[in-house]
Image (cartoon, rainbow, N blue to C red):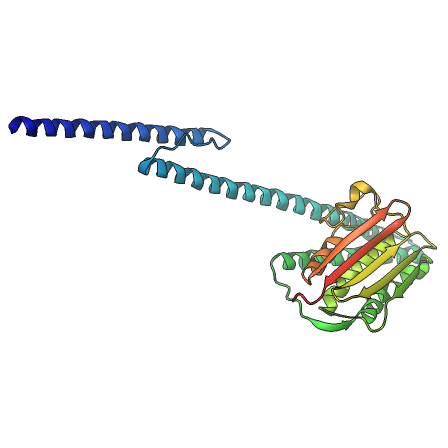
Length: 302
Protein backbone atom coordinates (compact mmCIF):
# COMPACT_ATOMS: atom_id res chain seq x y z
CA UNK A 1 0.00 0.00 0.00
CA UNK A 2 2.80 2.36 0.95
CA UNK A 3 4.61 1.48 -2.25
CA UNK A 4 1.51 2.23 -4.36
CA UNK A 5 0.94 5.56 -2.60
CA UNK A 6 4.56 6.53 -3.16
CA UNK A 7 4.32 5.68 -6.83
CA UNK A 8 1.24 7.85 -7.24
CA UNK A 9 3.01 10.77 -5.56
CA UNK A 10 6.03 10.33 -7.81
CA UNK A 11 3.81 10.19 -10.93
CA UNK A 12 1.95 13.34 -9.85
CA UNK A 13 5.23 15.10 -9.16
CA UNK A 14 6.62 14.13 -12.59
CA UNK A 15 3.38 15.28 -14.25
CA UNK A 16 3.55 18.57 -12.36
CA UNK A 17 7.15 19.12 -13.45
CA UNK A 18 6.25 18.35 -17.07
CA UNK A 19 3.31 20.76 -17.04
CA UNK A 20 5.42 23.38 -15.30
CA UNK A 21 8.17 22.96 -17.86
CA UNK A 22 5.65 23.30 -20.70
CA UNK A 23 4.21 26.47 -19.15
CA UNK A 24 7.65 27.96 -18.69
CA UNK A 25 8.50 27.11 -22.30
CA UNK A 26 5.27 28.75 -23.50
CA UNK A 27 5.94 31.83 -21.34
CA UNK A 28 9.48 32.07 -22.72
CA UNK A 29 8.09 31.93 -26.25
CA UNK A 30 5.49 34.60 -25.46
CA UNK A 31 8.13 36.81 -23.83
CA UNK A 32 10.36 36.39 -26.88
CA UNK A 33 7.51 37.40 -29.18
CA UNK A 34 6.80 40.54 -27.14
CA UNK A 35 10.49 41.47 -27.30
CA UNK A 36 10.45 41.09 -31.09
CA UNK A 37 7.39 43.33 -31.25
CA UNK A 38 9.17 45.96 -29.17
CA UNK A 39 12.37 45.86 -31.23
CA UNK A 40 10.80 45.58 -34.68
CA UNK A 41 9.42 48.48 -36.75
CA UNK A 42 7.07 46.06 -38.47
CA UNK A 43 4.57 43.90 -36.65
CA UNK A 44 5.95 40.33 -36.65
CA UNK A 45 3.33 37.61 -37.03
CA UNK A 46 2.81 35.43 -33.97
CA UNK A 47 4.28 31.96 -33.90
CA UNK A 48 1.96 29.00 -34.09
CA UNK A 49 -0.19 29.62 -31.05
CA UNK A 50 -0.41 26.66 -28.78
CA UNK A 51 -3.52 25.47 -27.06
CA UNK A 52 -4.65 26.52 -23.64
CA UNK A 53 -4.52 29.81 -21.84
CA UNK A 54 -1.05 30.81 -23.06
CA UNK A 55 -2.10 30.31 -26.67
CA UNK A 56 -5.27 32.32 -26.13
CA UNK A 57 -3.29 35.06 -24.38
CA UNK A 58 -0.79 35.25 -27.27
CA UNK A 59 -3.62 35.48 -29.81
CA UNK A 60 -5.36 38.26 -27.86
CA UNK A 61 -2.12 40.20 -27.44
CA UNK A 62 -1.54 40.02 -31.19
CA UNK A 63 -5.08 41.32 -31.88
CA UNK A 64 -4.57 44.18 -29.42
CA UNK A 65 -1.23 45.14 -30.99
CA UNK A 66 -2.79 45.10 -34.48
CA UNK A 67 -5.57 47.45 -33.29
CA UNK A 68 -3.07 49.79 -31.64
CA UNK A 69 -0.92 49.84 -34.78
CA UNK A 70 -3.95 50.68 -36.92
CA UNK A 71 -4.85 53.55 -34.61
CA UNK A 72 -1.26 54.80 -34.71
CA UNK A 73 -1.26 54.69 -38.52
CA UNK A 74 -4.56 56.59 -38.65
CA UNK A 75 -3.21 59.24 -36.27
CA UNK A 76 -0.05 59.59 -38.38
CA UNK A 77 -2.10 60.06 -41.55
CA UNK A 78 -4.30 62.62 -39.81
CA UNK A 79 -1.24 64.57 -38.65
CA UNK A 80 0.21 64.43 -42.15
CA UNK A 81 -3.09 65.61 -43.65
CA UNK A 82 -3.36 68.45 -41.12
CA UNK A 83 0.21 69.56 -41.81
CA UNK A 84 -0.44 69.57 -45.56
CA UNK A 85 -3.71 71.46 -45.11
CA UNK A 86 -2.03 74.12 -42.96
CA UNK A 87 0.71 74.48 -45.57
CA UNK A 88 -1.92 74.88 -48.32
CA UNK A 89 -3.85 77.45 -46.29
CA UNK A 90 -0.69 79.45 -45.61
CA UNK A 91 0.20 79.34 -49.31
CA UNK A 92 -3.27 80.47 -50.38
CA UNK A 93 -3.24 83.42 -47.97
CA UNK A 94 0.34 84.44 -48.71
CA UNK A 95 -0.34 85.72 -52.24
CA UNK A 96 -3.22 88.11 -51.46
CA UNK A 97 -1.50 89.31 -48.28
CA UNK A 98 1.67 90.09 -50.23
CA UNK A 99 -0.37 91.96 -52.84
CA UNK A 100 -2.18 93.96 -50.16
CA UNK A 101 1.13 94.85 -48.53
CA UNK A 102 2.61 96.08 -51.81
CA UNK A 103 -0.49 98.12 -52.71
CA UNK A 104 -0.59 99.63 -49.21
CA UNK A 105 3.04 100.74 -49.52
CA UNK A 106 2.33 102.28 -52.92
CA UNK A 107 -0.71 104.15 -51.55
CA UNK A 108 1.51 105.76 -48.93
CA UNK A 109 3.94 107.03 -51.54
CA UNK A 110 3.90 110.76 -52.11
CA UNK A 111 2.66 112.25 -55.37
CA UNK A 112 0.61 109.23 -56.55
CA UNK A 113 -1.96 110.20 -59.22
CA UNK A 114 -5.57 109.73 -58.19
CA UNK A 115 -6.09 107.22 -61.01
CA UNK A 116 -3.40 104.91 -59.64
CA UNK A 117 -4.57 105.43 -56.06
CA UNK A 118 -8.07 104.28 -57.04
CA UNK A 119 -6.65 101.25 -58.88
CA UNK A 120 -4.47 100.23 -55.93
CA UNK A 121 -7.39 100.61 -53.51
CA UNK A 122 -9.58 98.47 -55.80
CA UNK A 123 -6.89 95.81 -55.90
CA UNK A 124 -6.71 95.74 -52.11
CA UNK A 125 -10.49 95.33 -51.96
CA UNK A 126 -10.40 92.43 -54.45
CA UNK A 127 -7.69 90.63 -52.50
CA UNK A 128 -9.54 91.17 -49.23
CA UNK A 129 -12.72 89.76 -50.81
CA UNK A 130 -10.73 86.78 -52.05
CA UNK A 131 -9.42 86.04 -48.56
CA UNK A 132 -12.89 86.49 -47.06
CA UNK A 133 -14.34 83.96 -49.50
CA UNK A 134 -11.48 81.57 -48.85
CA UNK A 135 -11.86 81.69 -45.06
CA UNK A 136 -15.64 81.42 -45.34
CA UNK A 137 -15.32 78.32 -47.54
CA UNK A 138 -12.80 76.75 -45.16
CA UNK A 139 -15.16 77.30 -42.24
CA UNK A 140 -17.99 75.73 -44.23
CA UNK A 141 -15.86 72.67 -45.05
CA UNK A 142 -14.89 72.36 -41.38
CA UNK A 143 -18.51 72.55 -40.31
CA UNK A 144 -19.43 69.90 -42.89
CA UNK A 145 -16.67 67.62 -41.60
CA UNK A 146 -17.94 68.08 -38.05
CA UNK A 147 -21.58 67.49 -39.09
CA UNK A 148 -22.47 70.94 -37.79
CA UNK A 149 -24.45 72.01 -40.87
CA UNK A 150 -28.06 70.90 -40.75
CA UNK A 151 -29.66 71.06 -44.18
CA UNK A 152 -33.35 71.75 -44.31
CA UNK A 153 -35.67 70.57 -47.06
CA UNK A 154 -37.99 72.87 -48.94
CA UNK A 155 -39.68 72.80 -52.31
CA UNK A 156 -37.54 74.91 -54.64
CA UNK A 157 -38.25 75.88 -58.22
CA UNK A 158 -35.15 74.84 -60.16
CA UNK A 159 -35.30 77.59 -62.76
CA UNK A 160 -35.71 80.29 -60.11
CA UNK A 161 -32.85 78.76 -58.15
CA UNK A 162 -30.49 79.10 -61.11
CA UNK A 163 -31.68 82.61 -61.85
CA UNK A 164 -30.54 83.45 -58.32
CA UNK A 165 -27.28 81.52 -58.77
CA UNK A 166 -26.33 83.19 -62.05
CA UNK A 167 -27.31 86.76 -61.12
CA UNK A 168 -23.91 87.66 -59.54
CA UNK A 169 -22.12 86.35 -62.65
CA UNK A 170 -24.05 88.33 -65.25
CA UNK A 171 -21.57 91.21 -65.31
CA UNK A 172 -18.65 88.78 -65.52
CA UNK A 173 -20.33 87.01 -68.45
CA UNK A 174 -21.08 90.30 -70.23
CA UNK A 175 -17.51 91.55 -69.84
CA UNK A 176 -16.17 88.33 -71.37
CA UNK A 177 -18.99 88.29 -73.94
CA UNK A 178 -20.02 84.83 -72.76
CA UNK A 179 -23.57 83.67 -73.37
CA UNK A 180 -24.95 82.38 -70.06
CA UNK A 181 -28.18 80.51 -70.81
CA UNK A 182 -30.64 78.73 -68.51
CA UNK A 183 -32.78 76.09 -70.24
CA UNK A 184 -34.96 74.66 -67.46
CA UNK A 185 -38.71 74.12 -67.58
CA UNK A 186 -40.64 76.30 -65.15
CA UNK A 187 -42.43 73.32 -63.60
CA UNK A 188 -39.36 71.46 -62.35
CA UNK A 189 -39.12 71.47 -58.57
CA UNK A 190 -36.53 70.06 -56.19
CA UNK A 191 -36.66 69.21 -52.49
CA UNK A 192 -33.46 70.71 -51.12
CA UNK A 193 -31.87 73.32 -48.91
CA UNK A 194 -32.18 76.43 -51.07
CA UNK A 195 -29.19 78.40 -49.78
CA UNK A 196 -26.64 75.57 -49.60
CA UNK A 197 -27.73 74.13 -52.94
CA UNK A 198 -27.32 77.58 -54.48
CA UNK A 199 -23.84 77.73 -52.95
CA UNK A 200 -22.95 74.36 -54.51
CA UNK A 201 -24.17 75.32 -57.99
CA UNK A 202 -22.61 78.77 -57.73
CA UNK A 203 -19.11 77.28 -57.45
CA UNK A 204 -19.72 75.09 -60.51
CA UNK A 205 -21.06 77.95 -62.63
CA UNK A 206 -18.16 80.15 -61.55
CA UNK A 207 -15.69 77.44 -62.55
CA UNK A 208 -17.32 77.09 -65.98
CA UNK A 209 -17.27 80.83 -66.64
CA UNK A 210 -13.61 81.13 -65.61
CA UNK A 211 -12.61 78.44 -68.11
CA UNK A 212 -14.70 79.74 -71.00
CA UNK A 213 -13.00 82.02 -73.49
CA UNK A 214 -14.53 85.34 -74.62
CA UNK A 215 -17.35 84.74 -77.07
CA UNK A 216 -18.06 81.28 -75.63
CA UNK A 217 -21.16 79.82 -74.01
CA UNK A 218 -22.22 78.30 -70.69
CA UNK A 219 -25.51 76.44 -70.82
CA UNK A 220 -27.50 75.17 -67.83
CA UNK A 221 -30.19 72.55 -68.48
CA UNK A 222 -32.40 70.51 -66.20
CA UNK A 223 -34.65 67.50 -66.59
CA UNK A 224 -36.70 65.33 -64.29
CA UNK A 225 -38.03 61.78 -64.50
CA UNK A 226 -39.64 59.37 -62.04
CA UNK A 227 -36.32 58.46 -60.48
CA UNK A 228 -34.03 61.48 -60.56
CA UNK A 229 -33.57 65.17 -61.25
CA UNK A 230 -30.60 65.94 -63.49
CA UNK A 231 -28.77 69.22 -63.95
CA UNK A 232 -26.15 69.73 -66.67
CA UNK A 233 -23.77 72.69 -66.69
CA UNK A 234 -21.98 72.69 -70.04
CA UNK A 235 -19.33 75.05 -71.35
CA UNK A 236 -17.30 75.17 -74.55
CA UNK A 237 -14.15 76.37 -72.79
CA UNK A 238 -10.62 75.13 -72.44
CA UNK A 239 -11.57 71.76 -70.95
CA UNK A 240 -9.73 69.77 -68.29
CA UNK A 241 -6.57 67.75 -68.86
CA UNK A 242 -7.08 63.96 -68.45
CA UNK A 243 -4.51 63.80 -65.63
CA UNK A 244 -6.45 66.47 -63.69
CA UNK A 245 -9.96 65.15 -64.30
CA UNK A 246 -9.96 62.64 -61.46
CA UNK A 247 -8.72 65.18 -58.90
CA UNK A 248 -10.81 68.32 -59.45
CA UNK A 249 -13.08 67.58 -56.46
CA UNK A 250 -10.14 67.19 -54.09
CA UNK A 251 -9.43 69.98 -51.62
CA UNK A 252 -6.70 72.43 -52.65
CA UNK A 253 -6.11 70.62 -55.93
CA UNK A 254 -5.21 72.96 -58.75
CA UNK A 255 -4.78 71.60 -62.25
CA UNK A 256 -2.32 72.99 -64.74
CA UNK A 257 -5.10 75.02 -66.40
CA UNK A 258 -6.53 76.40 -63.14
CA UNK A 259 -7.32 80.10 -63.09
CA UNK A 260 -4.94 82.48 -61.35
CA UNK A 261 -7.38 83.14 -58.50
CA UNK A 262 -8.33 79.51 -57.96
CA UNK A 263 -7.75 78.14 -54.46
CA UNK A 264 -8.97 74.61 -55.15
CA UNK A 265 -11.79 74.28 -52.63
CA UNK A 266 -14.91 75.49 -54.48
CA UNK A 267 -15.65 72.21 -56.28
CA UNK A 268 -14.76 70.16 -53.19
CA UNK A 269 -17.31 72.16 -51.23
CA UNK A 270 -19.92 71.71 -53.98
CA UNK A 271 -19.46 67.95 -54.01
CA UNK A 272 -19.96 67.64 -50.25
CA UNK A 273 -23.08 69.79 -50.24
CA UNK A 274 -24.57 67.80 -53.14
CA UNK A 275 -23.75 64.42 -51.60
CA UNK A 276 -25.39 65.45 -48.31
CA UNK A 277 -28.62 65.94 -50.26
CA UNK A 278 -28.75 62.50 -51.84
CA UNK A 279 -26.99 63.69 -54.97
CA UNK A 280 -23.90 62.85 -56.98
CA UNK A 281 -21.74 64.99 -59.23
CA UNK A 282 -19.69 63.79 -62.18
CA UNK A 283 -17.71 65.56 -64.87
CA UNK A 284 -16.80 64.91 -68.50
CA UNK A 285 -14.27 67.00 -70.35
CA UNK A 286 -11.96 67.13 -73.34
CA UNK A 287 -9.16 69.66 -73.66
CA UNK A 288 -10.14 72.37 -76.12
CA UNK A 289 -13.75 71.15 -76.38
CA UNK A 290 -15.26 72.13 -73.05
CA UNK A 291 -16.56 70.56 -69.85
CA UNK A 292 -19.88 69.19 -68.67
CA UNK A 293 -20.81 68.87 -64.99
CA UNK A 294 -23.68 66.50 -64.27
CA UNK A 295 -25.50 66.73 -60.95
CA UNK A 296 -28.01 63.97 -60.24
CA UNK A 297 -30.44 63.99 -57.31
CA UNK A 298 -32.17 60.70 -56.53
CA UNK A 299 -35.89 61.06 -55.93
CA UNK A 300 -38.14 59.12 -53.61
CA UNK A 301 -35.35 57.58 -51.50
CA UNK A 302 -35.75 59.55 -48.33
